[in-house]
Amino acid sequence: MKIKRQKQAKKNINFYKYNFGFREPFQILIDGTFCQAALKNQIQIKEQMPKYLMGEVQLCTTSCALKELETLGKELYGAKLILQRYQVRRCPHFKSPVPASECLLSMLGETNPHHYFVATQDHTLTAGLKKIPGVPLLYIILNTIVLDKPSQTSLDHVQAVQLGELVSPAQQQSIRSLKEEQGITTRKDGERRGKKRKRKQSNPNPLSCLKKKKKGVPTPPLKKTAEGEEKKKRSRHKKRKMEGGDNVAAPAVTNA
Image 1 (tube, rainbow, N blue to C red):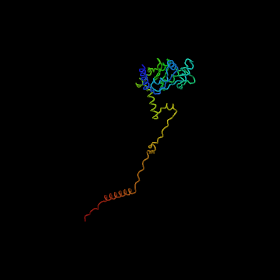
Image 2 (image 1 turned 180 degrees about the horizontal axis):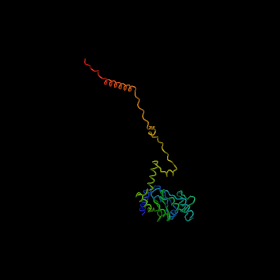
Image 3 (image 1 turned 135 degrees about the horizontal axis):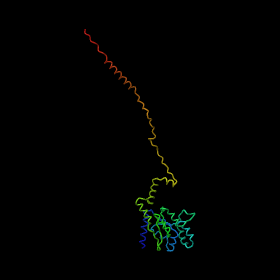
Image 4 (image 1 turned 45 degrees about the horizontal axis):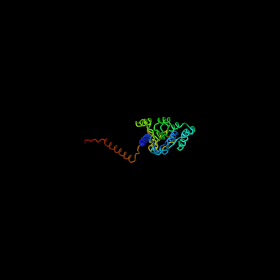
């Protein structure tokens, strides 16, 4: 039974790795209900979680989840001690705490961009998590940690990506990294980062530096050389002499 459960967990993890870009170390958001169930079933979360997920993990929680355990009193004091050992991730409710279920949902947003696993026994939180694509859900049943199968929302999202209707988070990340490598940023990205792209200084076009020719100005005639003028005059003089010789009448012959 244990081998079958391990194979199923590996299959589900590969689903999230391939379709949603999950990588080690896996970040696991834990609330007080999961710690209370682990305490009752004598489960060592820090030891058993990496073995079950077959990889390195980072156990974390939020200040709202800790605050909720404090308000619930002594009954959950043991769960509070366990939860205090994990990293506390910053949430937007630092000044005004909210219920843990609401806080964890806000940490995931609409697409779970930080690739969180969520470990909880809260049914209300579980129902909300199944509406977000790409959220691996962990819970405790029969003294063991179980990774739930992908929700229908996650399956529908993957199918839409395969049909070309959507772009997967992994593809979005690769597109962003390629844009950064090529130095291409959209206007929205530039405003978000508060940086302006510097334009590269380029040399002027050499053709634009040439002086423009004035239209309508005739080109000056070529200067005639003195030698050419003299040759022309001689040819005219010879022509006139020849014409004059042809026109002279021959002398009349008289009979003696």
